[in-house]
Image 1 (spheres, rainbow, N blue to C red):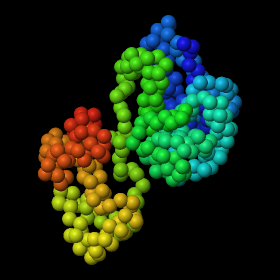
Image 2 (cartoon, helix red, strand yellow):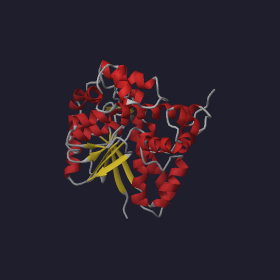
Image 3 (cartoon, helix red, strand yellow):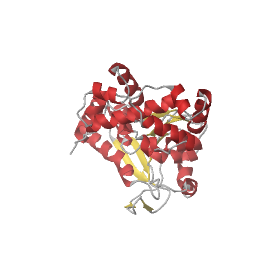
Length: 323
């Protein structure tokens, strides 16, 4: 087996850590595999002669060349950034991505690098993922793409997309598994102290950082539900509080938020439970009661549905000090 040719596409404003993260892990895998195994021929490429990454760091780049795998890092997506203007300034890179894919080679995006792939037309009629914080924006811009915000890595017909930042390691480990074998991938993960058993980005989602949907009516309903997390859900009583019929409450809330009051309440209860699991020593049963579930089994099932982990597993991963 010959060395796998991997090119990382550098462009103005890209994250330098996402340019070098995958090559560094592949270098480790080469050492782990030993001299008798085919390794990786990695290059940082660009259609430009000079590239400054996010923060102004100058990157040494090579001209575009044929590679087996082209990796497209993400960029700094700050509030207020005109994404259309950003992408318009990357016309040479988008053309290079399109050309590479047209040659039948693999294309991989890291984090919001998916937006460049979308601009190149590679996500049409494909499944994809990106950083959970920006998954809705990708779905809005790409109505023909099935965006899977819970996934860490999605591969569909030669195009791979990943979740935010550290998901580049999940992709790199899978690449190492395919090219160098499972044992090399496992050992590389241990050497690098990288989790090689992750399957979802759902446990990392913080809904407080997501754009908040809704108008004044739904926000008032949300506040009422948030203030009474432990109370039994009573749709009729909730509607009576706001002096509307249950049908009107459900319709107006759904029109403004895209979900039902019960769905919002469940997600809010899970959010509170996550905080208690991370910051307190309270038992799972106690936390279950505190967020409105007398049956801890029902609570655990709901929690796993929302986060991808059972409460005790979540606490073991995300427990924080209380001082």
